[in-house]
Image 1 (tube, helix red, strand yellow):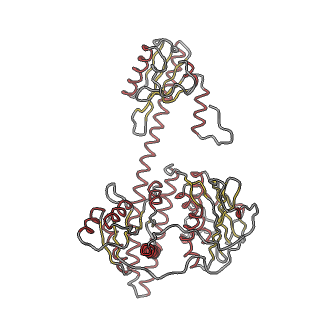
Image 2 (image 1 turned 180 degrees about the vertical axis):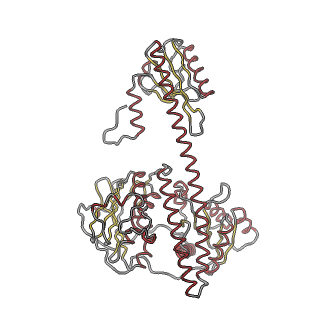
Image 3 (image 1 turned 90 degrees about the vertical axis):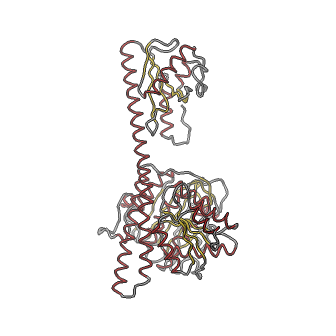
Length: 543
């Protein structure tokens, strides 16, 4: 197989090239006896051009009926028993030795049969073919075992991610409720220490689960085309309040261009970079910008923070590495953020680089493919000019009065349902609790007041999801009731489904203040007749 010029070969490309270069005829036969794939030597053996034999049975490929039936009989036996089989000198038109080996799928079932025809004859050739067949069988079994282990690990991590976040979310909710009722300074101090412990444990759990999923190969990128400003707007919305609280200026330089990447994974990659920029910047600010580099867009995060010595630029991407924190103070993070960034960059195929000097700030950059030639040409800049994130008020919008109304809360966990209900009632909301779609719809049909907003967990009992729940409520009410999804799930496919739905997403355990702000904003948008959408950030600095 010729490799494509200018394209980095994948492992599958190399395996295909190896198969093509092998002079021994080889093919893979499916459950129906058709050729799934064959190398040029096999195609030539039966008189076909490479690629023309695939999809045909051996009889359709022109082999004598007796020979085709003999090979197919061996194939059926291997499929049924899961053990290799071979024959020597019995099939007209084929080399002396023919070996068939089972190929197992992830469930340990024989899904195909590998066929190897040897050109030699005699005991030596027979022994070589048998040894090769045995080696191929062992390799196939090892691959199947690895895939089963990977599948089992995936199920475990998915369950752990969801189930372990549930009690953390309950702790957050009840801690928030308890803190609001404390007056004694000593009790308030204890509550603050409890909050620190909850936040520390939750942060460590989240980071370890994410690293484990990336290491296990459970996270795969599903690229699509989307405006880079959608990504910038989400970063502004998430980190604006933190910048404002620290008296830093968070500047966003919009860029009218579309990129090709996985939007959910790109958010996860940028989030630790933004968090670190704000954590290690004491004065000045942080700038999120982009500039064109040929067919790529270079997304950059500049800060005026403490900076990093050049000798440590590679070290910071290793696990549990934190410069300037020898005491492992968890208030300064866990040392896994940039390790996650490195792994996500590998999954996405986006190079991540850093430039920094001690006392001069840092620039982290991610290079992402552009989707076409449209874009803001003002971003074409090959220079490395310094940013100007001056100290002062953040570009985040000023706080607005909180809206209230009736919220239908759908959550299949009883403790979560009670905690969220208490929290919302404390904020002045009327609450309709429900454990699932049927209960929610039954309440509406029974005369319950129509909700102003639906707050639903993503993963409900059975096949139901929060997306299904909100859509069912909309169908019952006959209008587009605003909806918000809450989840402790980190499965990329589930997160993508929420992104496609357009519903705002809150990750468990969530900050009650941030949740309250999102609910208020969603209610305001619903009453104004326009449901929430990602907004393009305003240009607040020029370079």
